[in-house]
Every structure is written in C-alpha cells, then in structure tokens.
Amino acid sequence: MIKKSVAYTFLGFINLFAFADSQLNYLIPPEIKNDAFYNVIYRLSQDPSLNTILEIGSSSGDGSTEAFATGIQNNPNHPALFCMEISKPRFKALQQRYAHTQQVRCYNVSSVPLEAFPLEKDVVNFMKNTPTNLNMYGIDTVIGWLRQDIEYVKSSSVPQNGIEIIKTENNILYFDMVLIDGSEFTGMAELKFLYGARYILLDDINAFKNYTNYQELLSDPAYELLEENKSLRNGYAVFKKK
Image (tube, rainbow, N blue to C red):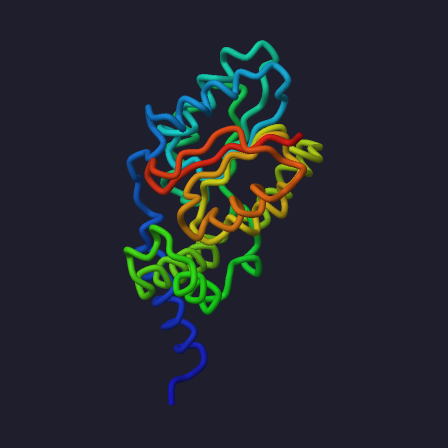
C-alpha cells in the first residue's frame, strides 16, 4: 500500500508533468494579423467615445493586441486596453512588448473560474449536434484540449475570475469594447460577465468558443450585427449595442 505522503508526491509529480507539457507553455504565431478582422479592430478602437477595452486571449501581443494598441494610440480619448492572457510564457512576452505603453494593462489571469468551464459531455453533445469547423479535429482531441485548459488553470495557480478582477480594480461596470478570443471553452461564460458592453467582437464563431454567443447576439434585439465574415479562419462577427 502506498503511504499518503508518497501518493501525494506522486500525484503532484504527474500534475507538474502535465503542466510542463501543456501547449499553453509555448508561444504561438498570431492568428488575427493584417486581415479583415485585424483592420476592423484597428478602426473601431479609434472611436473617440471609447474609454475601456478588454481583450480576452492576448497571447504574446503580436496579433489583435497590436491592432488595438495601434488604434488607441490614434484615439484622442486615449482609452485603456486591458489584456488578459493565462499562459505564463505568452503573458511574459506580452508584458515585455507593451511595458512602455501606458494605455495597455496586462493581466495574467483566467477570465472565468474553473466552475464556469463546460462539462465534457456538453462539449461532446455540441460536436455531435452542431457541425462546425471544430469537428475536423475529432472529439478525443477536443476533449484533450479541454482537460489541458482545466489542468493549466489548476496547476499554474493564476487568479481566477479575471474579468471581475479587472472590473473591480478599475471601477468598471461595462466595458466599451470587448474581444472574446481566449480559451475554446470559456466563451459562453465570458459573455455572461461581459453582456452590456457597447461593442462585442467574437472570433471563432464557427467553433465551440463563440458559436452560441453569435447565435444569441444575432437574435438579441439589444444588439445589431455590424460586420461578419464566416469564411475567414473560423469566422468572426462584430456586434454593437443599440
């Protein structure tokens, strides 16, 4: 029989190994870069009525973050851009890139708490009943991604409920603009925390991340669709509150 202390040490080693092997420990090239969505972000972020912008999924700051940061530099109102990235290596690169840009504020947090992540059965049911670009990867692969994301939140010890942390620290009730482009599995939970924002930008509307959010906002009389492109990568859409 294994003693408890030895068992805990063994389990801790397994968790550490899983954390060390996570894809979230690696830098990745930007996806939103010099394309139609990048240009929309750049243009909208120059709206002089903006005060606060939230980007979920900033990565190392080379893609959509760059579009936001360049846009707000040309904005006479000088809005604040709050960048959220859970991956520690990506956050480090993000923080270094914008260390001298006063308007950009970086947070190494999970956007939502662990209990807000979907159950595996919910992801499986979605993939079986809702054909999207996600299906090309197969259920086993996608569930592996879900487990990896959950394990990273647990093992990295980053603060959870990051959206609420940023709101509280900066006395924000509603953001003026938000981009939901973080984990594949937290988009629906994030929208609940962000509903009421003037502009809501969704990436990956043809995947689990934002498929449901896109459908809900499309049928929501409080919001109007400004722009969409379902064929660019996994699709994007921009909504504005009426």
